[in-house]
Image (tube, rainbow, N blue to C red; front, top):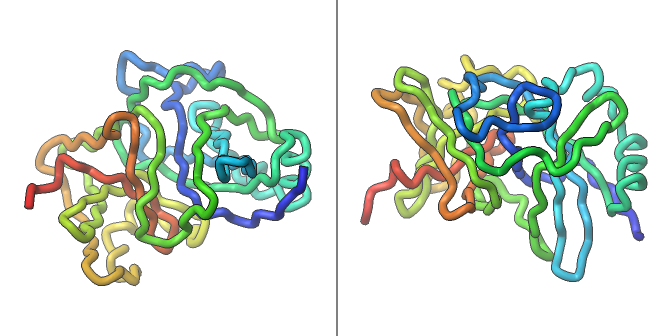
Length: 242
């Protein structure tokens, strides 16, 4: 199979299974997890070129480990090519580190289908997504992710919200260290001054007066990223009818 070099494919999959902290990859599907706010995780994205288009398979550290920096940083391009050879795919790229911003994460997906080691890093196979022949990598562009999750942001928590054209609202689900490793949950209140928002978009940081629930629509989550690769999910409950 022809191999391709992928330095950082900007596809915010975040396809994890909502796993518990046990190391068997089994999530708690009956009760919300303990607070996951500021929990660190990483992904390897295995890229396949098929007749139907590009397929990305996400291997995720969430619920298995906190993606130790010394192990994650040690993975170089030669390692990524070796992983691609082992998996029999066109390329493997890194996605992370990332940090959750919701207070609770609930998933009905079930346990990871497969758990494997990428050298010292234990990762679970979270999902596969068909990205098409020419996947969009533009910022503030919507992408669809197949997953069955419920994110809860508690009353009193600060959220970071993008408002887009046509009244669509998006809540930040994770902040990233891919572009800026100085970002913290405390720094995000001032993020709006750093973003080059397209016309018609606004950024707001606000403290919730009641719980906010953000979930997929019929198994599909709609997400966008800003230029710092922070990821936001569309929150239809915040939208108002025209």
